[in-house]
Length: 284
Image (cartoon, rainbow, N blue to C red; front, side, top):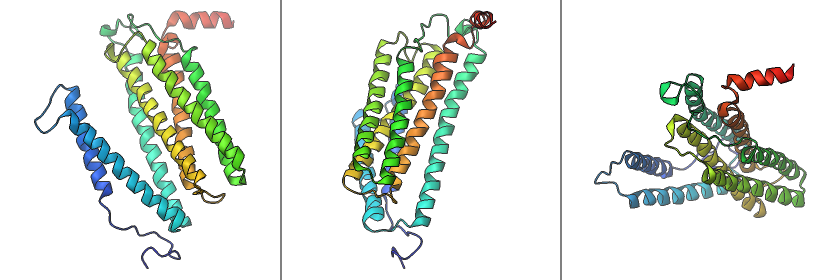
């Protein structure tokens, strides 16, 4: 009854890929931590970090190919299997939410009660903040537009509109790539770095972590785009694209929170009493 198409569940074969990926990911993260602490044990060198990355990419590629074969060509992903995969991906997104929650907590903790080392102000006195109405606002518009274009792609896939799917997908990939380019430009033009007090640390951790998720999301969407061109998706079965869309919308929501909290509120508007008083006076 193993791996039969008329069986409700998919009993996967034994594989060492999960163990190999987990082991080398842990080993690579330990190496990064040692480098950040200026510790270089005998068993770790810079070349080993590159080796870990190559091994992880190879095993992820092989694992992904197996999943494509199971779902597209073998028909093992029944309705019940798809429900389990959806639940697993939802739990993955929940874990990502908790990851960002920890860094937002650190940002709020320091901004709501800045100590004397920060000059009792937030942002710190010596920090020249980035204008939120410049690149950050434009990046917000880009991600919002990409969310709309990705929804257009989903509707076109369901209705079998091939030309609309391709046009919408290209627009989404372009908007996501442009966001990354502008984010790098913003970092290049910034007047403070990761080492400039806890403000620089939390700012670059939050925006950098989000930028990494945007890169993963663009890569995810590009792979799904190639799969669509290879006719792996149908109007009824396109679970891989659905996961990519969920992930991208999650990235959009996180950026909106980042823009409001880090750039607008954390940029001084939320903690500057004089600014609040001027807003109230203008309102009345």
